[in-house]
Image (cartoon, rainbow, N blue to C red; front, side, top):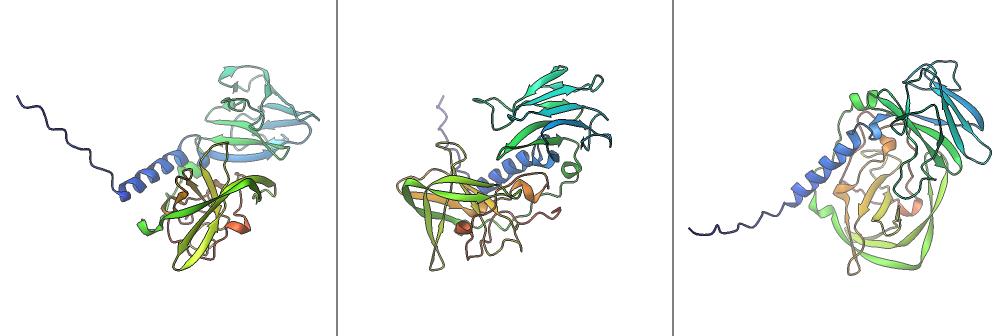
Length: 288
């Protein structure tokens, strides 16, 4: 008996890698709790907010029982919900009548914000600059059921660019606006500098969590024409040997391209390139 000669596993071609990345992207977007399932972004006022699908609530939901309950926002920002008797809703998967609601800015460790579920729908509280809102999702959302798919520019290896990394010590501050008018000041650890057609361009990333990947919020000459107007997103692995890989074939649309209920960042002026980046995701055909 001869031992089997080990066969080297074929290295996925560049095109396959991008296709694989795209299927992962599609899977996350269309997941039951993905961005397409958003059906509401409801800002809470101080005091009591009656919530439910009936017209007589302070916050009228597109799904769920006529009267779900009352969310109370205290002066100090703390939140409490009391469910209506026959709401049949659960809090973090358990039957309960009332609970403290922890929003996304005040969870600790790997915990998730308090989730209130009712039928195929649910909500949790998000905090944006001290303003608090219910982020409402429904796996039966029309946007999810009638999703038209993602359109792309053809995969083009020339848009996988090896940029030079110029670290900033200390980090620079960058102001990132959002579609809801908030402004975040973020730390920029450095800049990616690259050449294209004889011109030099620079992009400033930030990290959504300490030590996380580089996150670029970008716009270019295709923005608002072939691509989504506000921005596209691009992640890059941390710099290695003074280089950072910018693969524009993986530039993708923010949630705001698919739903009016997201709070996406806008490309800062520093990241608006005078260049047509004909790679990555195009604008969504079903743009709201």
